[in-house]
Image (tube, rainbow, N blue to C red):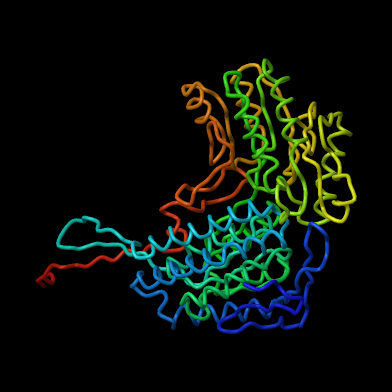
Length: 492
């Protein structure tokens, strides 16, 4: 795979790669240096409508939505193989575009390959059921693809979170239109091209780059949109939900979190500290399920914080392609400034900075968007830094003395995506896990997920789920068919 060019990359609609209708372009930068990286077309409302028109035609005419799911399975397996063959180049592209370390980007690519392998295995197993009813009747259900599905992806895991919904939608027989994040569209465009090579018919996998407020909303509002999958902020998610509700179409929304980690006094403190560090400093904290609130038992608080502080201060920052780098830059200068505003707010509210809390020093990192791993203590529960999703490498610390207090602190948030707890006592682990308001709970493990495990949250963290064996149901509709097998009723 070649290095991205400053020559504009176009929109992938049908069999064509097109400039935007207005001819506008956007220059992307490498967040490690803020130097120009590539130029992409900026789509418009007209481009969104054109993509939906092409996708609907392909859905009706290409045969992709037919009964033979094995055809789809073969193309998706082929796409997985192409992705695996190109994984090193795609990982490097992801690192250059988004900033994450190459190790993290390679992990993401492995997850994407596994996602396509997994859903390919489901493509020919989308089954209905027979239902016994009274009389001489035969009743059965079938599952059918929805039609054209829209997928609006975030910038923090540009390819992984896009393909998490695109792959099962394709497996179910739909045509998809993907709008990647404006800052990080390069790997989505690359995979859109690979899909053609894999035998996905033209018009079944379309990629439209552009601004969310224009292109994204136009895609959801289009009368041909049969469902929408969105990962991003709660504010934008609420707008998408309103549009979907007006159109009476399903929406899967993953809208972030403020995830707690509870450390009990009997925990393996060394393992727990490493898990906490991974959960908040991984991907520079730019994770929907970042473990951003540490709730630690007072009896071990002091020594445990020393371990976490040491991990934070030992984390090596730098451009993601450099060997040995453990944390890359934040995605943009604006976002780095936004993260540090939360640290300033915590200080103003009386919080203390145990470590970090500033841009990374040194001339080597001066041009990039580097923020030090940060640990905050004594921050009031009412502070914006505690209540709102920061989306950066910032950990807030709280103490507890009994399990009831820990559970109360953990659930004291409008979000409910992820929670973790560390304890050697499995009775405690089971009892506490059942009472945590989170769609996913890990015990004695940092944030970890697999393609076969459902991913979704409670409360303002969203609606619905991704991943798991039932994920293709998100992209199908159920039809009931009843046949009367008896003789016609006699007259008179």
